[in-house]
Each structure stands twice: as C-alpha cells, then as structure tokens.
Amino acid sequence: MPELPEVEALTAILAERAADREIARVLPVAVSVLKTYDPPLSALEGHTVTAVARHGKFLDLATDGPHLVVHLAKAGWLRWRDGLPEALPRPGKGPLALRLLLAGPERSGFDLTEAGTRKGLAVYVVRDPQEVPGIARLGPDPLDDSFTLEAFAGLLRGVRHRIKGVLRDQSVIAGIGNAYSDEILHAARMSPYRLASDLTEEEIAGVYEALGATLRSAVERSRGLAATDLKGEKRGGMRVHGRTGQPCPVCGDTVREVSFRDSSLQYCPTCQTGGKPLADRRLSRLLK
Image (tube, rainbow, N blue to C red; front, top):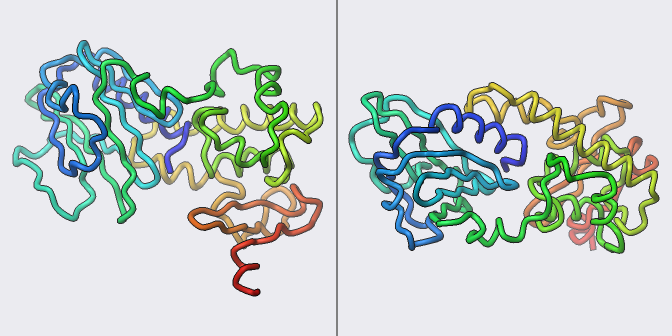
C-alpha cells in the first residue's frame, strides 16, 4: 500500500507536471472507483490545476473549480504518461480505472490503475477536501512542524492499544501504514505488542525520534524518482518489513512474522522483543 513517503513523491510529480495546466478529459473506466457523484467527474474538465497536496495517504488535485481526491488503497497506483492514446479506454478486466488527460498537443496526463481482485481505489470529486470522510477524520501529519514530541506524547496518553495499531490509526496520525509502522518500531527497538499507555517518557521519545527519522529518510530517498521507480525504492529501503526469514541488518537475527487475517507484521526478536518470538495467532489456531 502506498503510504506517506510514496504519496508525497507522487504529489511532487503531479505538482511539477500538472500545475497550471487545463484538464481536457477525465475518463472513468471502472465506475466503481467513483465515491461521489455531485459534482460529476466531468465538472473537472475545462478547469486549471492550481495546486497538488497530500492529506495523509490521500492525493488532492486542486483546480480553480472542484478538487479531484484519490486514495490509492492497497493496490492502486498513479502512472504518468506522455502521449496518451487517442482511442477511448474500454471498461474491462484490466487494471486501468481512470484516465486524466491534460490539454495540449502532447496528450500528457495520468492513469489510475489497480491490480488484483480486491478493489479499494477511491476517487472523489468535491468542492472541499474536508467533504471526503477519510480526510475529515485524519489525525495530525507527522511531517508538520506542529507534530512535536509533546503533541505525540499527548496522542498516546491513556491509549490502551498496541503501539503498532496506534501508529497505523489514521485518526491518530495521518499517513503511516503497515510497512512504515514496522520500520519505525524496529528503529525504536520496540515490540509492536507494547501498549501505548505503558510506554515510559524515554520510550515515547525513542518512538517519536524513530518515526520522524524513518519517514523523512524515505521521503528523501523518493525525491526526484519517477513514479515507476517508487515501489522498488520503498521495498529496497525496508529493514524488516517484507523480509521474513532474512537476517536483520542491525543484529543478524532472523526477521520473523506475525500473520493476521488480511495482513502481517515483521519484526526482529533480538532488537525488539528481548529475543522472544511473538505468538502467531493464526498459526496457533491451526494447531488447536
């Protein structure tokens, strides 16, 4: 799933290539991705892109009319293209969900695509981004100057949930998902199962430092890359996430995994749990 660093990079790509340009056509291919109907998708046509912003994991293409807001979900992606074909795209079983064409003879623009059968890509056309429910409920952005250690500590105070889940909760902190929460907790040498309310001041400061360093490093690595290279950069920059069975780059212990119904987490026992493997509840159920 694209998370804050990748969406930040896509925001920069669109800001550079689409700002101050007129939208000529917006062509829906998979109508199921449209989550709003007023204004219609066609209301974007003829308007000029004035800015591109990020709200957590949401992309916001602002025009001098409505906003086009996109959430890429788990398997969605944005592909910038020069020389888009003149033939209209046909609905079908392919990954293409929506095409946006900018005015001009070069026929540049972007495609929104989604792989797999579990569809979550969401497109909204709104007058104000706050009309999107997912944006309206977002917590603070961890890259904002107002996201201080004191602010972070206040978010954790009294929260009796595992720190892994707290970091992923978009209503608490915007933009962090499964991958970067694994990376943050590894850098902080913190078990994903620790309760947020049980953390000491020193531990909270450690997670806060790891959070900022991990996200800013990922954003910096992604800066200037083409959209096609962002996924590879994300995978290559991971130390534990997606690396089950491989040696931890810090201590050499084997990276382990805990599986859930629709996701999994990765961690290093030596770095994070005092050498003790965490119980894999899915496997435990199978053994009963």
